[in-house]
Length: 54
Image (cartoon, rainbow, N blue to C red; front, side, top):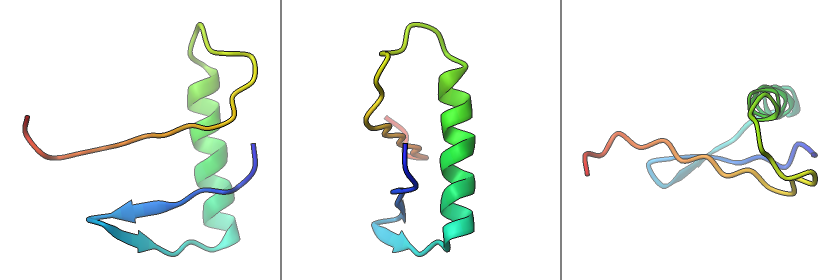
């Protein structure tokens, strides 16, 4: 996976420099890769974190 990562908070894009993009990407990839039963070829990972009550 590349470092094509975007951070959006409250509908606003948050700019990130290459180091931060790479760090976010590697941390997320490491966490996801530790999970079981994943597809062999992961093309995209989407994560949503919300503080809204349902």
